[in-house]
Image (tube, rainbow, N blue to C red; front, side, top):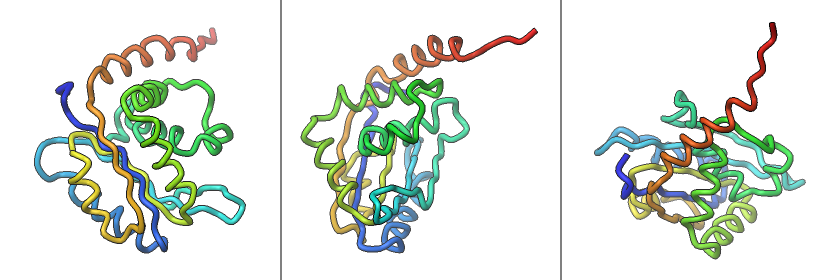
Length: 177
């Protein structure tokens, strides 16, 4: 992947689950347009107790070793209080590389604003779209009450993923004779 390829991290708040699903479908429908890219999207519903539920999840990268890490890494960054209870502390899928990449390349104020938007919404959409500029993704979210889209470059993410997968995976394997 070209190091200059954009990665868009998007968070949107919606009035209803139907609105969030509509916007999910709008972004998902563009996955095959133009140059090759990956899209990982989740529609979220927040229960009255503050627990988030994933209502729909789609990812073009789900069959890759690190494919689920695109979205789970973004969710760990945007919903840290949920991640503490729902995700294991170590990973072999590249989630750590995604989290570190987001933290190193996105302004903290932007991340806080996106996290606050998700946390303050009853229904929402969180997505990571590789090789699509943020403006292209954000303009598809026509039913969102609010949208926060940040863009970072692919940069050295491939090396970070390779390192995580090469160094963490062997620690998690055990051989039984």
